[in-house]
Length: 277
Figure 1: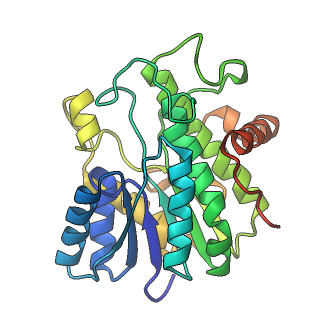
Figure 2: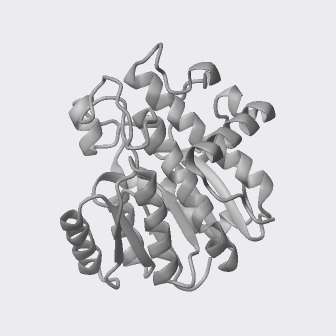
């Protein structure tokens, strides 16, 4: 990818999202940052500008509300005529600070499935025409190696809930949605890949829940940046990566019937527009 790409990063006010934004700003990227808090977004934009790059544009939305996601997509489309990279990073973990008990989104969906999968699914499809018009473009799903198979008979985990299971299911859904979209859209226009950026980086969520870190934020940034802008990744699509190497996701991710069922269910739950092929 040459020139100054326009890159939208969701969940960019702390942790991996903020670190990635600062890194890409220093490299001259034209950034659009997403977050829930206008004040925290302003601080994130200040930090990116201090790194030597242009001040990013910002958009607010609560990903637990699909109406806000749809409105955010409209605001992005109104603010720019090009989008080269969408990094779907926003999400919630398995425990703190949201807690380990089952919650629901504004739309009545299980909270982790809604925020970690449905919001990014809707945003991606709402922005897909803009990404295709900006070809070559990329979609990067920040997922996890912590995956749990999807039970379509209890998709919202009303019968058997744990935060770990809900998180793992939502992350596998991210990966499956990415694989399905990658098969629909020409790689010359938009590539779609997912990754586990690093293990237990020192983010707010990890430190609150686990109490210690394993990998560094720099490792996570490097792995995510590779999928977002590395010329070596041009044209490569429909893959899952563990840090900087290609890996295998849970076996269900490669079940075409399961992927199709998840896609159709996600489209119904979100009202997302179908890709115009």
